[in-house]
Amino acid sequence: MESSQLKEIIQGIPKAELHLHIEGSFEPELMFEMAKRNNITLDYDSIESLKKAYKFNNLQEFLDIYYTGAQVLIHEQDFFDLTWEYLTKVHSQNVVHVEIFFDPQTHTDRGIGFDVVINGIRKALEKAKQELGISFKLIMSYLRHLSEEKAFKTLEQSIPFKDWIDGVGLDSSEMGNPPSKFVNVFKASAEQGYKLVAHAGEEGPADYIWEALDLLKVVRIDHGNRCLDDEALVQRLLDENMALTLCPLSNVELKVIQKMEEHPVAKMLKKGILATIHSDDPAYFGGYMNENYYETAKALNLNKDQLKQLAINGFEASWLSSEEKVKHISRVDAYFDSLH
Ligand code: ADE
Ligand code: ZN
Image 1 (tube, rainbow, N blue to C red):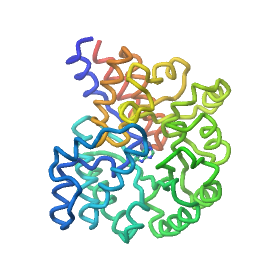
Image 2: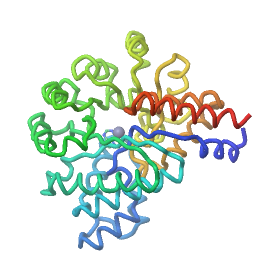
Image 3: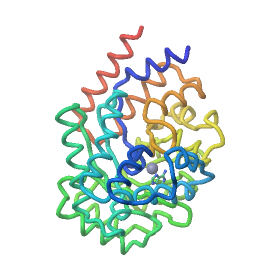
Image 4: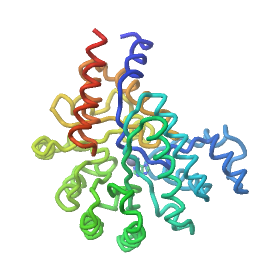
């Protein structure tokens, strides 16, 4: 397929984004603008020099820069602007449903109120629902390099905003911070009615995916690339129709894989795994949803049926109601029918 034709097809697919860190959508241009209005001096003297620093050998090198960038976010308006910019961007790419992560501890540890963070994000999500027709869910992520006790504190801070939070996740430095470290706080989170997800098997081993399933009792695995190392685990994912939220450009940029041609998503689809594609931290990894679809499709030679399966899987794996899923999936079907 011609690349222009492939891009046009991808643009037209109605899509759901289920793995997106809002702090990872912080574009350098907005970061500089916000730094200026908040009187913060960045370590970089220009947008270009900041962008040049976006070369990572592993997850930790990325996280160090990502947490530094987030320090520019101070006021409710900042969290609103960040979220609104992301939502208008993905709206232009025909993303119609989002389930986004925020990292409260990245902000509360700097003395920013939990309320400041969530009010800004929530207002942008509401506005996007009204004005752009994007539906949404919100997921609060615990930082796994911090203690479980600190995660408990975050859980406690979230309670007044419980109606705005659909689930909890687990992100940050994976190696050495296995899911088992957070068993108690995940149990307590479930008791509050939160759905559970966790990053597992991004850099960490297949064992971490087992732990996320067996100990944390998650309903979705974020990344999960390493599952193909373990046949019994693949069978488990199939038996439970467990979704994996894959992030191909992120995987290349963080050297989880050496090149896109090695991405496991095509193998996963072939096995019948509920594999889905998302952008993770688009401002840092060179692309939003469409670019992730495009680069993956190009490198792996995905055909229209595989693209359609990925789009359907995105809605299937979402937390939309069954009726909403049916509605979106029938739109994906109709779109692909219209291409013939
Ligand atoms: N936080 C933001 N992006 C992340 C990723 N790819 N893995 C773990 N934690 C993250
Ligand atoms: Zn992630």
